[in-house]
Amino acid sequence: MRLFAALVPPTEAVEHLDAFLEVRRGAADFRWSLAEHLHVTLAFYGDVEEWRLDEVVERLRSAAARRTPVEARVAGGGAFPDPAAARVLWAGLEAEPHEELERLATGCRTAGAVSGARVDGQRFRPHVTVARLRRAGHVDDWVRLLDGYRGPTWRAGSVALVASHLGQGARRRPRHEVLERVEVGSGE
Image (spheres, rainbow, N blue to C red):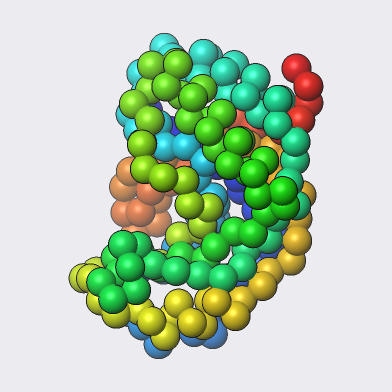
């Protein structure tokens, strides 16, 4: 199973961002993310054997329990690898306290690694992928546009363990399935 741990914004935040982008999508031939795919990846585990799932869930539950929920909102933007040669356009995530979000991501990565998953080792940069480019290109105007975006604030109080089923969604996109939600700050 292809798994990742994520913060999933509430419906209100997703709808706000989706409405902001909807009137602008026609201006670029990007592969825009579906609203139901909008999330903040805390840890990417890649392909995980099904027999490891219970351990991943338990370790993820323990890691999240030791953290405190954060106040978050989607705000700002950027591009990977950079705006001059972008392959991915993203909206940022502001969180208070920011250090607690970093600790949550570290705990989620550790939970996967200790469970035997091959955890993506890239530096954590909290973001929501809003579009992918078919070919690398300049997206400076889009980054400036997203820099002015500020979504509603929400309490990030749970982490979702998500299975990504490649090619099984609409238009051969991935289908995301939330396997488990674990509470942040439950003190377990």
